[in-house]
Image 1 (cartoon, rainbow, N blue to C red):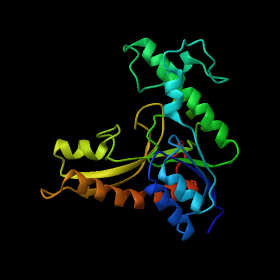
Image 2 (image 1 turned 180 degrees about the vertical axis):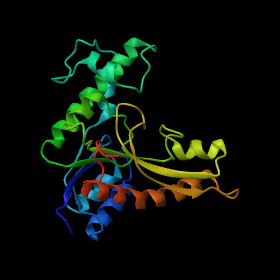
Image 3 (image 1 turned 135 degrees about the horizontal axis):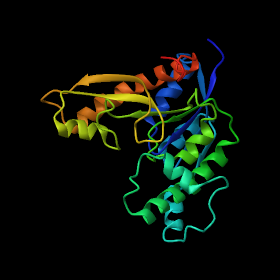
Image 4 (image 1 turned 30 degrees about the vertical axis):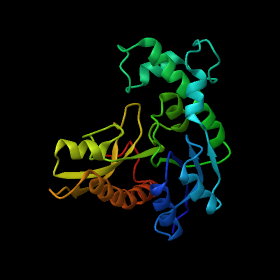
Amino acid sequence: MAQKIRVGVLISGGGTNLQAIIDAYRSNRIDARVVFVGSDNPEAYGLKRAQKLGIPTFAVDYRAIIKETRGKPLKDPVPEGFDLETVLAKQRVSPLSSDRAKVEQYFRSRAIAEASLLKEMEAYPFDLLVLAGFMRIITPYFIDRVNSDPSQPRIMNIHPSLLPSFPGPDGYGDTYRYGCKVGGCTVHFVDYGEDTGRIIGQKAFEITPDDTIDTVREKGLKLEWQLYPVCIQLFAEGRLRMDRP
């Protein structure tokens, strides 16, 4: 096996994709190793998965930060280097025609949380950041501090649909409710939009008349556990540069 890349993982819940990645590198199926696991949820079970294996963990409580900053004036302290107008110009997740004060509050509170994430991550140098069920949209403030080389994005996400169809938090549910006969999952690089980054890999499954929303999710998860390690290996082999077709 080649030199192993260092992978950081962000989660929000149980961490089944995290476990799939751990299993893949412990069985020498990918040239990678997990160097930290972080979460926006201090109670995430995935943190316990990592701790049992001696992988460093940390949590930044997004809910507490959002509650603490709600209703406070925007002149209150924001992270060093955070420029609201730059972030608003780059982001593609919130229309600026909506309530301006709420949009500003959203990006300000997220930047405060993201600055705490970045501070925790400083202790663990990494080559690739993997979002494995991290249920928070990350902003340009965070993305630009991880992606130092525009030709080599370093943030991957796995999404529960065959993008570009059904972006958003409930891809399997949206796929099922729409009546699709095929569902699937997608690994993509993260950009300034919501599930709009360059697609790295996809896997599909048939949806039959006997399926329920629960069986659709079960089918999808099993494919996610296969797909994510494959895409991480493509990154490890240097086959995903943006300046290549």
